Image (tube, rainbow, N blue to C red; front, side, top):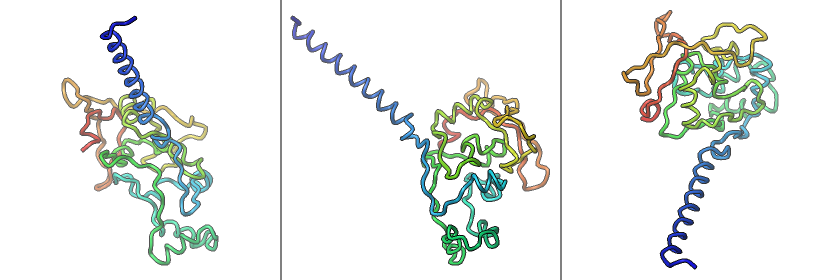
Length: 241
């Protein structure tokens, strides 16, 4: 029915079509599927620490435990001495705190299991984002309602770029509970209030993905001054270097 050349051509087209569909399916799966992006990842920690209790009910601010995050690229894990600052008195004999007491007495740190991890070729600075008044919940979700912390965002490049390009849609302004450059929030305010953005100006003309926003002068030497959030950089070198 078909000539040899036409039959060969049909097979080639069929194989190319199947290969394209299979490649697209693999790329989509490994690029967007929650099992790959780690959305929902919730490891069991060595000590059953509840953010829902400590933050949501007791009102302990994020920066009390994650001290120095306004000046550091990384969010420091609280030291055992931070925990024992309260638990030398509060529930000092609780069996759930046995590992904490042991670590405090021996000087050996607890081995917390990391929840949020970016690839080694990606640089993310907590200090730059917090200085812009961006609340922890913008990336980490409502941690104050989590008994066990889980990852709520894919932390993919596309997810970051969406926020850099349209910050007004994704940013949650700093709340009082976070303790970072905050102004007291009125009770009853929407959980995700609209962010007040600074006027972002391109660094180059024509713009190539780098933007600048005005920075207030520091009130005290050595203390970084907060600024309003604006459009984030879209150039490769801003996050990959």
